[in-house]
Amino acid sequence: MLAQLLASEPDDISPLSGVELVRSKVKCLYLMAGIFTSSDEPEYNFLQDPTRAQLFYELWPRDVDVVYSPMEVGNEIEYKPETVISDINWTDIHPIKQVYMKYDCNTGQKMWDPLTVINAVEGDAVFSLSERGIVSLTPAIGTVFSPSATGNDRYQKPGSVAWCNEMLEKIRKYTKLQ
Image (cartoon, rainbow, N blue to C red; front, side, top):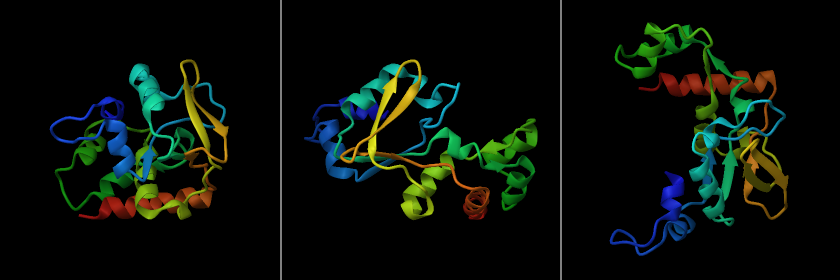
């Protein structure tokens, strides 16, 4: 979807192209994607549609920041199924709760996506972020980070066990909100 927005031309809804619109409206994009430590596994999100992923990288304005929440950070935080069910006790009708009640999800849920939202809402202070750089996409590997003082990209770094526990408690707090 972002690639399609970026590739769009001015129309009757906006006199701006997609790139111009992003430049005028977006301060920072928080993106759940990437692998920035060694891994035998390719980057999943971008490699599902490599054509659009490459278009995103070609068109994203280099003057608009991107903060990545990579797989290796969320992998370290597991929200166990029985805890998810307990935390969503305020309703019987909840899609996530229903999945955990009806299917064997004994692997738990890794917390990739919520870390992106927490970073966007609460800011960078609760995360350890990389230096600035430029992320590129390669067909075989996925995301590659090259440090650059003028780059617009940064990524979350894995935290300690204590930090992971703190993030899980934040996620649980948000889950319990009605």
